[in-house]
Amino acid sequence: AVKLSPEKLLCQLRDRVNVTVIQGSDGPFDTSEWQQYLPGKSLNETVGRLGRCAVVSSAGSLKSSHLGQEIDSHDAVLRFNGAPVKGFQDDVGQKTTIRLVNSQLVTVEEQQFLREALYNTGILIVWDPAPYHAEINEWYRKPDYNFFESYKSYRSTHPEQPFYILNPKMLWQLWDILQENSLEHIQPNPPSSGMLGIMIMMTLCDEVHVYEFLPSKRQTDICHYYQKFHDRACTMGAYHPLLFEKNLVKHINRGTDEDIYTHGKVTLPGFRNVHC
Ligand code: NCC
Image (cartoon, rainbow, N blue to C red; front, side, top):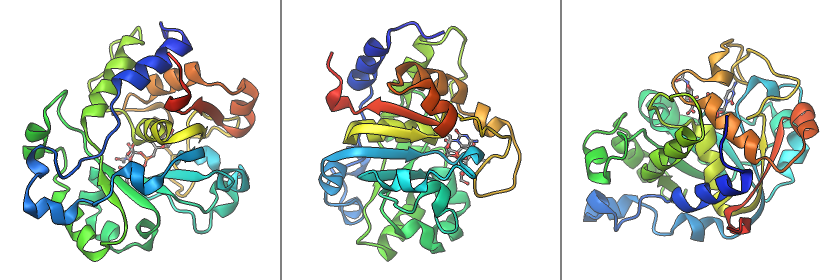
Protein backbone atom coordinates (compact mmCIF):
# COMPACT_ATOMS: atom_id res chain seq x y z
CA ALA A 1 0.00 0.00 0.00
CA VAL A 2 3.04 2.28 0.35
CA LYS A 3 3.58 4.32 -2.79
CA LEU A 4 7.04 5.84 -2.53
CA SER A 5 10.26 3.85 -2.82
CA PRO A 6 12.02 3.23 0.51
CA GLU A 7 14.72 5.78 -0.37
CA LYS A 8 12.22 8.49 -1.28
CA LEU A 9 10.18 7.80 1.83
CA LEU A 10 13.29 8.14 4.02
CA CYS A 11 14.00 11.49 2.35
CA GLN A 12 10.45 12.65 3.02
CA LEU A 13 10.75 11.68 6.68
CA ARG A 14 14.15 13.37 6.94
CA ASP A 15 13.10 16.60 5.25
CA ARG A 16 9.49 17.09 6.32
CA VAL A 17 9.42 15.89 9.92
CA ASN A 18 11.10 18.42 12.14
CA VAL A 19 12.06 16.57 15.32
CA THR A 20 12.70 19.22 17.98
CA VAL A 21 12.00 19.83 21.64
CA ILE A 22 10.50 22.97 23.16
CA GLN A 23 13.13 25.59 23.90
CA GLY A 24 13.00 28.66 26.10
CA SER A 25 12.88 30.84 23.01
CA ASP A 26 9.68 29.17 21.68
CA GLY A 27 6.40 31.03 21.69
CA PRO A 28 4.54 30.92 25.02
CA PHE A 29 7.53 29.29 26.75
CA ASP A 30 9.67 32.44 26.43
CA THR A 31 8.77 33.66 29.91
CA SER A 32 11.06 33.97 32.92
CA GLU A 33 8.97 31.34 34.69
CA TRP A 34 9.49 28.75 31.98
CA GLN A 35 13.24 29.49 31.77
CA GLN A 36 13.55 28.01 35.28
CA TYR A 37 11.94 24.76 34.19
CA LEU A 38 13.11 24.00 30.66
CA PRO A 39 16.57 22.36 30.50
CA GLY A 40 19.36 24.78 29.67
CA LYS A 41 21.04 22.43 27.21
CA SER A 42 19.46 21.29 23.95
CA LEU A 43 18.65 17.59 23.50
CA ASN A 44 21.49 17.33 20.98
CA GLU A 45 24.02 18.77 23.42
CA THR A 46 22.79 16.46 26.17
CA VAL A 47 23.03 13.20 24.20
CA GLY A 48 26.01 14.05 21.99
CA ARG A 49 26.51 12.19 18.73
CA LEU A 50 25.13 8.67 18.99
CA GLY A 51 26.24 5.68 16.92
CA ARG A 52 24.17 2.49 17.27
CA CYS A 53 20.83 2.96 18.99
CA ALA A 54 18.03 0.67 20.11
CA VAL A 55 14.31 1.39 20.38
CA VAL A 56 12.52 -1.14 22.60
CA SER A 57 8.76 -1.39 22.09
CA SER A 58 6.69 -2.48 25.07
CA ALA A 59 5.10 -5.41 23.23
CA GLY A 60 4.28 -8.70 24.95
CA SER A 61 6.33 -10.48 22.29
CA LEU A 62 9.52 -9.30 24.02
CA LYS A 63 8.77 -11.92 26.67
CA SER A 64 11.29 -14.81 26.51
CA SER A 65 13.12 -13.07 23.69
CA HIS A 66 16.49 -13.04 25.52
CA LEU A 67 17.30 -9.86 23.61
CA GLY A 68 18.62 -8.05 26.70
CA GLN A 69 22.35 -8.38 25.97
CA GLU A 70 21.92 -7.39 22.36
CA ILE A 71 19.82 -4.35 23.33
CA ASP A 72 22.35 -3.23 25.95
CA SER A 73 25.20 -3.46 23.41
CA HIS A 74 23.88 -0.27 21.78
CA ASP A 75 25.28 3.19 22.54
CA ALA A 76 21.83 4.38 23.54
CA VAL A 77 18.49 2.72 24.33
CA LEU A 78 15.04 4.35 24.13
CA ARG A 79 12.08 2.97 26.12
CA PHE A 80 8.44 3.99 26.48
CA ASN A 81 6.10 5.12 29.24
CA GLY A 82 6.16 2.86 32.30
CA ALA A 83 8.07 -0.02 30.67
CA PRO A 84 10.29 -1.46 33.42
CA VAL A 85 13.74 -3.02 33.19
CA LYS A 86 13.98 -4.42 36.74
CA GLY A 87 13.15 -8.10 36.62
CA PHE A 88 13.08 -8.10 32.81
CA GLN A 89 16.78 -7.52 32.00
CA ASP A 90 17.21 -10.84 30.24
CA ASP A 91 14.57 -9.90 27.65
CA VAL A 92 14.78 -6.10 27.39
CA GLY A 93 18.21 -5.17 28.83
CA GLN A 94 18.85 -2.64 31.57
CA LYS A 95 20.24 0.43 29.82
CA THR A 96 17.84 3.39 29.51
CA THR A 97 19.23 6.46 27.77
CA ILE A 98 15.92 8.06 26.83
CA ARG A 99 12.39 7.40 28.10
CA LEU A 100 9.58 8.80 25.98
CA VAL A 101 6.34 9.26 27.94
CA ASN A 102 2.92 10.43 26.83
CA SER A 103 1.13 13.30 28.55
CA GLN A 104 -1.63 10.98 29.74
CA LEU A 105 0.84 9.09 31.92
CA VAL A 106 2.32 12.31 33.31
CA THR A 107 -1.17 13.62 34.15
CA VAL A 108 -3.51 10.71 34.89
CA GLU A 109 -0.80 8.58 36.53
CA GLU A 110 0.85 11.67 38.05
CA GLN A 111 1.42 10.19 41.52
CA GLN A 112 3.28 7.18 40.12
CA PHE A 113 5.12 9.37 37.66
CA LEU A 114 6.37 11.70 40.37
CA ARG A 115 7.26 8.88 42.78
CA GLU A 116 8.44 5.80 40.90
CA ALA A 117 12.21 5.36 40.62
CA LEU A 118 11.71 3.92 37.13
CA TYR A 119 11.46 7.45 35.74
CA ASN A 120 14.64 8.72 37.38
CA THR A 121 17.03 7.11 34.88
CA GLY A 122 18.11 8.68 31.62
CA ILE A 123 16.63 11.57 29.69
CA LEU A 124 12.86 12.04 29.82
CA ILE A 125 10.84 13.35 26.90
CA VAL A 126 7.08 13.97 27.17
CA TRP A 127 4.71 14.44 24.23
CA ASP A 128 1.08 15.52 23.99
CA PRO A 129 -1.37 15.21 21.07
CA ALA A 130 -1.74 18.75 19.76
CA PRO A 131 -4.70 19.56 17.49
CA TYR A 132 -4.03 18.94 13.80
CA HIS A 133 -1.28 21.35 12.61
CA ALA A 134 -2.01 23.73 15.50
CA GLU A 135 0.44 26.47 16.35
CA ILE A 136 2.32 26.08 19.64
CA ASN A 137 0.26 28.87 21.19
CA GLU A 138 -3.05 27.17 20.46
CA TRP A 139 -1.76 23.83 21.74
CA TYR A 140 -0.40 25.47 24.90
CA ARG A 141 -3.86 26.84 25.69
CA LYS A 142 -5.59 23.49 25.18
CA PRO A 143 -3.26 20.51 25.42
CA ASP A 144 -4.89 17.07 25.20
CA TYR A 145 -3.76 16.44 28.80
CA ASN A 146 -2.68 19.41 30.85
CA PHE A 147 0.67 17.98 31.89
CA PHE A 148 2.48 21.30 32.41
CA GLU A 149 2.02 21.46 36.20
CA SER A 150 3.16 17.88 36.66
CA TYR A 151 6.16 18.63 34.41
CA LYS A 152 7.09 21.58 36.60
CA SER A 153 6.75 19.52 39.81
CA TYR A 154 9.01 16.84 38.37
CA ARG A 155 11.57 19.43 37.25
CA SER A 156 11.60 20.96 40.73
CA THR A 157 12.26 17.65 42.46
CA HIS A 158 14.72 16.32 39.82
CA PRO A 159 16.47 19.45 38.52
CA GLU A 160 19.55 17.51 37.37
CA GLN A 161 17.68 15.04 35.17
CA PRO A 162 17.19 16.27 31.60
CA PHE A 163 13.47 16.37 30.84
CA TYR A 164 12.24 17.73 27.53
CA ILE A 165 8.87 18.50 25.96
CA LEU A 166 8.57 17.29 22.38
CA ASN A 167 7.58 20.01 19.94
CA PRO A 168 4.16 18.69 18.80
CA LYS A 169 4.51 20.06 15.27
CA MET A 170 6.25 16.86 14.24
CA LEU A 171 3.22 14.69 15.05
CA TRP A 172 1.19 15.98 12.15
CA GLN A 173 4.14 16.34 9.79
CA LEU A 174 4.64 12.61 10.34
CA TRP A 175 0.91 11.82 10.19
CA ASP A 176 0.68 13.54 6.78
CA ILE A 177 3.39 11.25 5.41
CA LEU A 178 1.64 8.20 6.89
CA GLN A 179 -1.61 9.26 5.20
CA GLU A 180 -0.02 10.08 1.85
CA ASN A 181 1.52 6.63 1.72
CA SER A 182 -1.57 4.66 2.67
CA LEU A 183 -4.42 3.73 0.36
CA GLU A 184 -6.93 3.88 3.17
CA HIS A 185 -8.22 6.93 4.99
CA ILE A 186 -6.48 7.20 8.38
CA GLN A 187 -8.25 8.58 11.46
CA PRO A 188 -6.67 11.92 12.33
CA ASN A 189 -5.10 10.72 15.58
CA PRO A 190 -1.42 11.22 16.35
CA PRO A 191 1.16 8.47 15.82
CA SER A 192 1.99 6.17 18.74
CA SER A 193 4.85 6.78 21.14
CA GLY A 194 6.59 3.91 19.36
CA MET A 195 6.68 5.69 16.00
CA LEU A 196 7.71 8.97 17.64
CA GLY A 197 10.56 7.23 19.47
CA ILE A 198 11.77 5.77 16.19
CA MET A 199 11.82 9.26 14.62
CA ILE A 200 13.68 10.71 17.62
CA MET A 201 16.39 8.03 17.43
CA MET A 202 16.71 8.35 13.63
CA THR A 203 17.42 12.04 14.28
CA LEU A 204 20.04 11.44 16.99
CA CYS A 205 21.80 8.25 15.85
CA ASP A 206 23.84 6.81 12.98
CA GLU A 207 21.86 3.57 12.95
CA VAL A 208 18.70 2.44 14.74
CA HIS A 209 17.55 -1.07 15.67
CA VAL A 210 13.91 -1.33 16.65
CA TYR A 211 12.80 -4.35 18.71
CA GLU A 212 9.33 -5.90 18.55
CA PHE A 213 7.61 -2.97 16.86
CA LEU A 214 7.16 -5.34 13.93
CA PRO A 215 6.22 -8.50 15.81
CA SER A 216 8.38 -11.62 15.62
CA LYS A 217 7.28 -15.24 15.73
CA ARG A 218 6.59 -14.56 19.43
CA GLN A 219 3.64 -12.31 18.48
CA THR A 220 0.97 -12.52 21.17
CA ASP A 221 -2.24 -10.82 22.29
CA ILE A 222 -0.52 -10.00 25.58
CA CYS A 223 -0.28 -6.23 25.46
CA HIS A 224 2.97 -5.56 27.34
CA TYR A 225 5.95 -7.73 28.30
CA TYR A 226 5.48 -6.50 31.88
CA GLN A 227 1.74 -7.15 32.36
CA LYS A 228 -0.73 -10.02 32.03
CA PHE A 229 -3.28 -7.90 30.18
CA HIS A 230 -4.53 -9.23 26.79
CA ASP A 231 -5.64 -6.85 24.03
CA ARG A 232 -5.00 -7.28 20.33
CA ALA A 233 -5.42 -3.51 19.83
CA CYS A 234 -2.04 -2.97 21.54
CA THR A 235 -0.26 -4.50 18.57
CA MET A 236 -2.71 -3.57 15.81
CA GLY A 237 -3.76 -0.15 17.04
CA ALA A 238 -7.09 1.45 17.89
CA TYR A 239 -6.56 5.13 18.63
CA HIS A 240 -3.09 5.43 17.10
CA PRO A 241 -2.52 4.63 13.39
CA LEU A 242 -0.28 1.77 14.50
CA LEU A 243 -0.91 -0.52 11.54
CA PHE A 244 0.03 2.24 9.10
CA GLU A 245 3.12 3.07 11.14
CA LYS A 246 4.17 -0.56 11.03
CA ASN A 247 3.63 -0.81 7.27
CA LEU A 248 5.79 2.25 6.77
CA VAL A 249 8.58 0.93 9.03
CA LYS A 250 8.46 -2.44 7.25
CA HIS A 251 8.90 -0.59 3.94
CA ILE A 252 12.04 1.29 5.03
CA ASN A 253 13.59 -1.63 6.94
CA ARG A 254 17.16 -2.27 5.80
CA GLY A 255 17.44 -5.51 7.75
CA THR A 256 16.19 -8.95 6.71
CA ASP A 257 12.75 -10.53 7.09
CA GLU A 258 14.53 -13.27 9.03
CA ASP A 259 15.62 -10.65 11.61
CA ILE A 260 12.01 -9.59 12.01
CA TYR A 261 10.77 -13.14 12.32
CA THR A 262 13.34 -14.34 14.85
CA HIS A 263 14.21 -11.15 16.79
CA GLY A 264 11.40 -8.72 15.95
CA LYS A 265 14.31 -6.58 14.79
CA VAL A 266 14.24 -3.78 12.22
CA THR A 267 17.32 -1.84 11.04
CA LEU A 268 16.91 1.80 10.04
CA PRO A 269 19.47 4.41 9.03
CA GLY A 270 19.96 7.56 11.02
CA PHE A 271 18.87 10.61 9.04
CA ARG A 272 22.45 11.84 8.73
CA ASN A 273 23.13 8.66 6.75
CA VAL A 274 20.21 9.23 4.40
CA HIS A 275 21.36 10.86 1.16
CA CYS A 276 18.71 12.43 -1.00
O1 NCC B 1 1.32 0.72 25.46
P1 NCC B 1 2.34 1.77 25.23
O2 NCC B 1 1.70 2.89 24.25
O3 NCC B 1 2.99 2.40 26.41
O4 NCC B 1 3.49 1.12 24.33
C1 NCC B 1 4.60 1.87 23.83
C2 NCC B 1 4.75 1.63 22.35
O5 NCC B 1 5.11 0.26 22.08
C3 NCC B 1 4.48 -0.20 20.88
N1 NCC B 1 3.70 -1.41 21.18
C4 NCC B 1 3.20 -1.65 22.41
C5 NCC B 1 2.50 -2.81 22.67
C6 NCC B 1 2.32 -3.75 21.66
N2 NCC B 1 1.70 -4.92 21.88
N3 NCC B 1 2.81 -3.49 20.43
C7 NCC B 1 3.50 -2.36 20.17
O6 NCC B 1 3.95 -2.16 19.03
C8 NCC B 1 3.62 0.95 20.35
O7 NCC B 1 4.35 1.62 19.33
C9 NCC B 1 3.47 1.86 21.56
O8 NCC B 1 3.38 3.23 21.18
C10 NCC B 1 1.59 5.15 23.69
O9 NCC B 1 1.81 5.03 22.48
O10 NCC B 1 1.96 6.12 24.38
C11 NCC B 1 0.83 3.99 24.40
O11 NCC B 1 0.59 4.36 25.79
C12 NCC B 1 -0.37 3.57 26.51
C13 NCC B 1 -0.45 4.14 27.96
O12 NCC B 1 -0.95 5.47 27.95
C14 NCC B 1 0.96 4.15 28.59
O13 NCC B 1 1.49 2.84 28.60
C15 NCC B 1 0.94 4.70 30.01
O14 NCC B 1 0.22 3.87 30.88
C16 NCC B 1 -1.72 3.57 25.80
N4 NCC B 1 -2.66 2.72 26.54
C17 NCC B 1 -3.76 3.18 27.10
O15 NCC B 1 -4.08 4.36 27.08
C18 NCC B 1 -4.63 2.16 27.80
C19 NCC B 1 -1.51 2.99 24.39
O16 NCC B 1 -2.74 3.01 23.69
C20 NCC B 1 -0.48 3.77 23.62
